Image 1 (tube, helix red, strand yellow):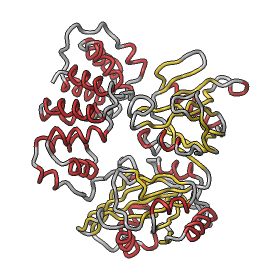
Image 2 (image 1 turned 90 degrees about the horizontal axis):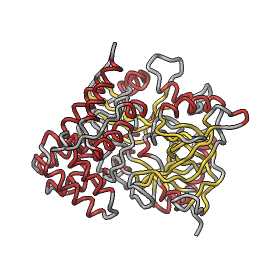
Image 3 (image 1 turned 90 degrees about the vertical axis):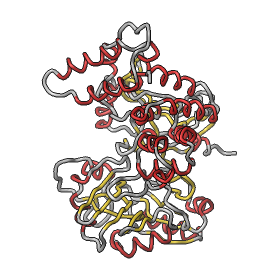
Image 4 (image 1 turned 180 degrees about the horizontal axis):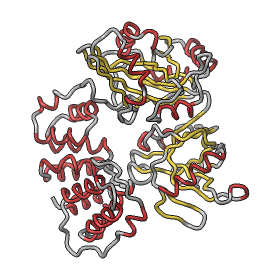
Length: 507
């Protein structure tokens, strides 16, 4: 298929707010693709190219700009092959070779294709084809049940591969996709509430568990082999030998565990998050030890537990790893939930997560069955731009422009980010130095006082609430926003939504 057909489809999808129209346009495109093109096209449509980021920045893209081709000639496969070459070029002379590859690619592209390619390379692709919409389109194009497609995509962690299987395979083959020990699945996510009582109203009887200030891990053991993955499904087994040792010693054969790891001080309390993440991100051995704590189990010795209630999964977890289960208590009483929350805070943890006791494990989804409660309102937002500082901050990028995720496109492009405020508060000198260097690496354009960046950096922001404001497109502004920390362990797609923030407005 010509790349231009895909580009034109993305424009049609972005230009309509109708979900049905989006699904129909994408399904028609998927039906016209050759089987080998399906995973590549799905990656491009969902703004997740198969190769990921290939190390090409704004300056390289600008230098490669050429007169657009008069007629389309590039195929989807041509772009895929070029991304492979860019990713695989290394060593002496790599810079010149990559520049040549990029110039050749741009010279063969029409104007619309050049813009699309630049968006792919810079991580700015905004097609309007959110994964949920695209998943529905795969179901429409293949004639398979949408629930079967969604489940296969969740359990495989690969929408492109799922699309290929759905369109070219049988329904039985699609249904056969299941948990595989050693293949990570997308983690279940939690919504937010302001109090344990409010969370219980959403969940009913629940397991109220400590919310640790650590790094999310998913641990797989198959026989004697242990693998550990981050919330983004990256393999970090080599960084966590202490976790490998713990899980390798459990009385079982095969297991998939969901939990967190964090550093503890001499009294058993949690060390600062930055210390945990410094150790978590280090490839070399460090003195700091990371302790694993588990709150869920998805598989045990040939038995999948995803569709079993949380009560059953907790029972299994208490049997196989009682010393490593995150503390918690099952209750429907708001007073008990509040006591557990206060106990967690007194122990130095963030708060609690309230989980409906009858809920199944919904991989990759954020719903009302899991609700996190923190004593202060904190939200994960995306940095859109940064302003140059003044006074003692002269020469440093200081004031952050903050955006909330807009998955439905209610205030702009679907899947984009809606600006909700600015802040320079809470930034240490160390963070100022770091972000000044980092955001210039991520620069896409600048004005006299502001550097606009790729929307890929997640920062945790504490606020006192929100207020109505005509200044920003979402109609709200943050109140007393301050930086708590950068979240290298989260992707921009996991940022809190504009809908979540708007829900804070008082009636």
